[in-house]
Structures are given as structure tokens and as C-alpha cells.
Length: 511
Ligand SMILES: Cc1cc2nc3c(=O)[nH]c(=O)nc-3n(C[C@H](O)[C@H](O)[C@H](O)COP(=O)(O)OP(=O)(O)OC[C@H]3O[C@@H](n4cnc5c(N)ncnc54)[C@H](O)[C@@H]3O)c2cc1C
Image 1 (cartoon, helix red, strand yellow):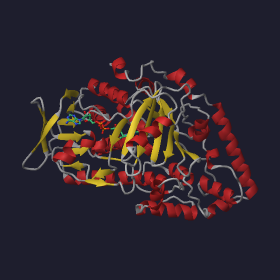
Image 2 (cartoon, protein in one colour):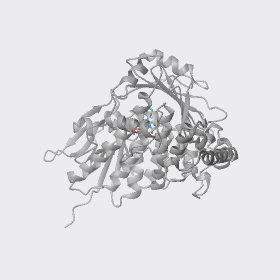
Image 3 (tube, rainbow, N blue to C red):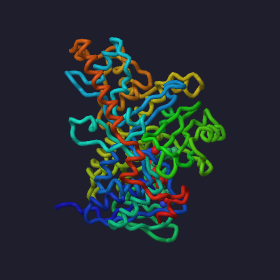
Image 4 (tube, rainbow, N blue to C red):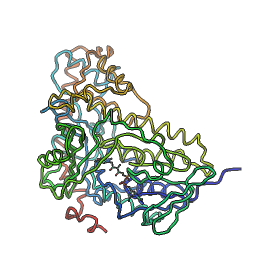
């Protein structure tokens, strides 16, 4: 006899996590009643404005039409992240969403480049990345799908207005039958027999009973953390920043198709250009920088006039001990937080939703299913953590104790092994469930000054003159392809220019 299916899903919280989950479950899980409770009075974090390419999979999953989504969220396109001052002051490098060069022979492309460099070729690795060259010229077009074309070698993501994103998903989800309940959760009622959540009690006297509960209540983690007591693992020893200040500023005439991350004395500043305004913020360590100094640094480094006062946010980097406990699964900030250096939070939400769909339970809630979900999610968080730690650890800045202590910190063995293997031979240790592919690791390892002392012997299969001819040809092809692309503004004008909004009044205008 088959087990009873899950019939009632209650989603607690209506930030990006809650509405992403609502839209996906309403689209893909048949025969369930989904209720989402959120509190306008509490509001959302609302600063998740940059994404990474797998977001296309999520948009595809829920059937979002891309141009409509771009218009509805005042989005721009993102080809990667420019890191300014991370290795040392004055230095910059680019982490592109796309590959470098074209593989030939038995060794991967970057091994041929390493060999050429060891033979004296001065060409930078970035010269082989169409994504990087296009980004530096402010160019954008969607990639092609012909694998023989150079225009298939890059990918892209989006910068979007986080509040508009949540609203857009809300309209998608409610159109597909999700019931929205305004109210504050006052108490979480547990089933005394099995410790599962039985219902959420609201401060207006309402009660939401369900089979499956998603905790999307943000940093509060009201269900998993508070009611079920699942502990939090603090990763501040690896990622020392614990505060942020966010401020919007005016739009700039020519938006760059990339996020910029600029390192400062005790942290870093983001700049995310949108169609109607620019998103900015500083992420810093309160042990090394006061809030006033952080605000002054942020405001002194804007490209345009601030539109508001900086908004403070506090966080502790880390993760919940488990993400799925009994009949409750936490998504988004309720499940953990890794600072936004590589724009991974929305991805982790998406990945949690996809994993939940893969392991969707029946009403028995067999703990073996939860255990596998948790195993995979822990690994995924740790992979992202390692990638972020690399940016801090491999710095050569001498201007503050903050950067010195990052250089000297003990790092996870998984990252230490990866760095050492790369230094030795330019090879990358592959890791299960790593959202960052080879090209991303190469960009950041090389960008942060990790210089391999050797290369793969299989890359010695070309005579130096032939190698030079191949590499020169590739650089030329990349440079001309980048020049041939339209600017981002031209592309947006032709396909997805959003309606003009007054920054700060976005939601009034749309709703
Ligand atoms: C400084 C900073 C920068 C960031 N930048 C990025 C980025 O560039 N890219 C990226 O991918 N991510 C980024 N993030 C992360 C991103 O903002 C979040 O992952 C995303 O917004 C999801 O948030 P959430 O839905 O989990 O929580 P929230 O947005 O906090 O939503 C929580 C919801 O729970 C509700 N709630 C809470 N308590 C109650 C209650 N008692 N009763 C009823 N409802 C309740 C609230 O009303 C709200 O609807 C950033 C985060 C920070 C802090």
C-alpha cells in the first residue's frame, strides 16, 4: 500500500526564498494546497540583486519568459564580476561566466597557456575569454547554441531589483493557486508524538496547519532554528565579515554588464547597475572597522548620488547543522548565510528547491530522505564557502590587519589541497556538487596570484612556434568577436527596456 501524499504545504516567509519555493512547487507538485504567510510589517531583506548563470534553469523550471522578467525587475545582464584591489591595491581581475580558449590536444586549454607563459608568452589569460573582453567593452548579446561558434563560449546571469523580483514571483505563484496570508507568526505548534511541526499560529488568532513546512523566515529561522532548535555552525573564522550597509544610488548612463567588487581596508564594496538605479553596499568586519567608517567609505566610493541613507544589516556567516528536520525544510537565509561576494545565496535557494523536488517526500517523512538531502546540501554550502575563502586567503595587501589576518588564517583542508595541487601543476581537483566550474576556479586562483610552478606534461605536444600560432589566432578571434557585439544598452533597448520608475517608488508604481 502506498503512503499518503503530502497535501498541504505551508511556506513561512515571503522574501525571495519563500516566493521562489511557492512558484516552483505550485508549478511542479500536483494536487497540493500551498499557503504562504508573510508579514509586510517585518518586510524582507531585499538586497539580493546579483545572480549566477544557473538561474536560467530556475527560470526555465517555472516557465518565466526572460524579457518579461528583465522588464519586471529592472534587470541588467551580468557577464561576471570584476574584482578590484583584492590581490593588492591597484590590481584588478575578472571572474567571467564562460570558458577560456578552445581545448586542443590532450591537455586542457589553460595548460597550453601555462606552458606558453613559461616559455615567455606575456598574453594574459583574460585575452582568451570572450566574456571578459565583451564585459570590459560594455558589450552584451545572448550566447548562441552552435557549439562551433565562439558566441557559444559564454554564459550570463542578471542583476535585478530584489523587491521587484519577490513581487514578480509572487504574482506568478498566486496566479498558479498559491494562497497568500498576511500575518505574523506568533507560535509554532509541535506534534508531541513525533516532534514534527503541526501548525503555525498567527498573532491575529489564525492557525495554519500543514503536512510540510518550509522555513523561509530569513535570518530569524523561526521554524528550524527557533522552534526545532537546530543549531548553527559559525564560519566567521573563515569569512570574517559580519556586517553590511546597503545604499541605492542614481542610475548611470552606460551600465556595465558586470558586478564590481572593490576591496577596502576591512572588507569590500559591491556595485550592481540596474536599469533604474545602482545597488551598492559595503561588507565588512566589525572587529576591524566601525559602522561610521564603513558608511563613510561606502558613500565616498559611489558612482552616482545616493538615494537614501545606508541601511545596516548584521549577519553571522555559516549554516544550520541540518536543513531538513522532520517535516520542516529551511531555504534562504533561514538555512544559513554566505556573504554575497560571488552572488550565491539565490542560487542556494534555487538549488535547495530543486533538491526538494528531487527528494519530494510523502507523509511518512522517512528520515533517510532527509539525511541524503542534508548530506548534499552541506557539501554544496562547503564548496561555496571554500571558493569565497580563496578570495580572502590569497591576498597580498599590506594596508591593514584585516588582510594580514586573512592571509594567515587556517583554511579548510578541502581548499588547502585544491590550492596546493594548482600551485604544483596547474591542475584542478574536481569536487562533487561544486556550482563553480573549472573556469571560475581558474579565474580566481590566477587572479588572486596563485602561480603554478609547473604544467601538465601532456601540454608539451606542440612545438613552441605552433603553440604561438594557435594562441595568437585565438586571441584575435576573441577580440574581434567582442568588438562585433552590441553594447548592453543597445541590446536592452532592442529587447527588454523596462518602464521608467522613480527609484524608491518601484513597488507603488508596479502594484
Ligand atoms: C548584504 C547582503 C547582500 C546580498 N546580496 C546578494 C546577492 O547579490 N545575490 C544573492 O543571490 N543573494 C544576496 N543576498 C542574499 C539574499 O538577500 C537572500 O538570500 C534572499 O533575499 C532571500 O532572503 P530570504 O527570503 O531567505 O529572507 P527575507 O528576505 O528576510 O524574507 C523573510 C520573510 O519572512 C517573513 N517573516 C519573518 N518573520 C516572520 C514572522 N514572525 N511572521 C511572518 N512572516 C515573517 C518576512 O516578512 C519575509 O517575508 C544578500 C544578503 C545580504 C545580507
